[in-house]
Amino acid sequence: MKIVLAPDSYKGSMSALEVCAVIGRALRAELEDADIEALPMADGGEGTVEAIVAGASGRIVELTAAGWSGEPIAARIGHIETEDGPCAVMEAAGLFGLPMVKPSERNPLLATTRGLGDAMRQVLDRGYRRMVIGLGGSATNDGGMGMLSALGAKFWGRDGEELAGFGRDLAELARVDLSGLDKRLAECAITIASDVANPLLGEQGATRVYGPQKGADAAMVELLEQAMCRYADQVEDAAGKRLRDFPGAGAAGGLGFALLLLGGKIVPGAEVLERIVGLRARIARSDWIITGEGRSDGQTLFGKLPLHVGKLAQSAGKPALLISGSLGTGWERLQPYFVSCFSTVTSPVSLEECLRYAEKNLEAAARNAAQLIKYCSRRQ
Image 1 (cartoon, helix red, strand yellow):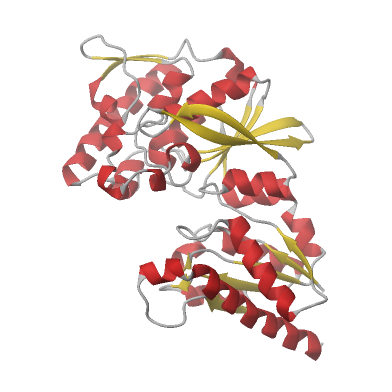
Image 2 (cartoon, one colour):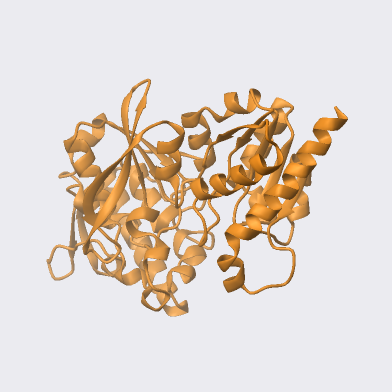
């Protein structure tokens, strides 16, 4: 019996790689003859580099880049080989991710995407011309100004001073010059992995939807929204194209907008992972598929990874199980895609307890899932 494990990370407790290890251990305890294939997954957020490197037999490359505050940090990117040559894999969450900032220090005015530009420049120096960039989980709302600055664009404030590219700089912007952007970018194929379809501006835009979770209060949201609009006007005038309304332009606080400007193509993160690791073919060769995430609810239906895995399994005529940290409002709408949906939490407990006992609870749920697989196999 072949079982494919294709979970996302359980945010705040376990990486997708760790989730695979725990589920695999539980399955082997109940199903001694099982052939288990672990494929840690991601949808463009935290864990994207790790998942792609693991699934594509790549390797981790270490470098130094600016973190969310602009101070240098040790960063990790991925190297994989593709049919079209070497490809560098990067993620916003690993450079300026929200979990990297203490809740008391979260402030999008003080955060920058410059680190991604630093990483891209170093990738170009090393000869890469293919990039995959995951945009989920950022702490930034600078419209990608920081990234563009690191790649050679120039932004000046009202006083004539060059701006570094923080969220606060959007309101100071007076002039844009994109002519200095690294010419090598024109040779690149940039895949933007994101599960967000928000435009840059408006009620469903980057600032109004995601600004509050990054530390913006109501007054700051209004300031950033107005400043982002002026920024978009000037950048689009300089580039000679309008990108603000493109689905995904609002990803990572407008970083999607800046990457579209560089010629990037937005692809749902789950699809990017699926293609790179060959998930569709692996599912076709399996008997069962198990996926999961930290919390499954009605939002999972909007392009989240477990739904994508469930649809692939359904298309291949294979049974799939969902094992998630918890099942929230609307989870029952996922039932058409799975034989069963399991929650690792079986009684009312605090979030702290959920995180503390995440591994133990996941192993128990996975053993229950194994019992279901065993029963179904006997009935065949």
